[in-house]
Image (cartoon, rainbow, N blue to C red; front, side):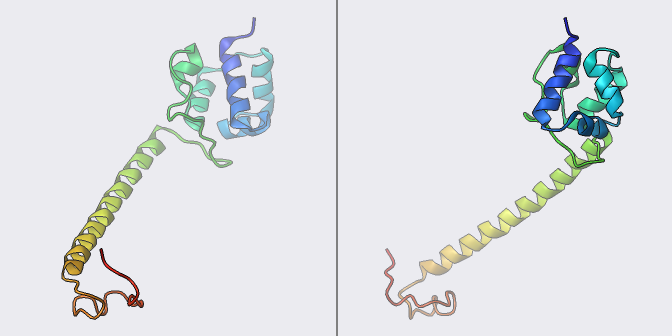
Length: 147
């Protein structure tokens, strides 16, 4: 019977659509090391299991015991060649995402204010020659009707 951890590593390699060699490189081990693990000649070291978990966003408990869902974020993360993620990088990523969300919220507030102003402006609309309308839309609206 094959080692269940090895079965899960095999599953991850197939699911990542990477070659065994590319998978090993991203984890930071040699192609020979991954071949020895997958063949059962060597058991994976806990450090290797942790590196697989960090690199590909895999649930560490699932990888070791089969408990829980395989992926932390619902799908495998295939990092760019030569890069690995770790807890420190995850913290930096979370901080960067929080900052991006803050900027998006600020943009949303600007758009809401613009929509309010436009709505108020159009509320004064009495036709395409209305002083409230001239200059707002640089298009010919003479054939349009406002409902």
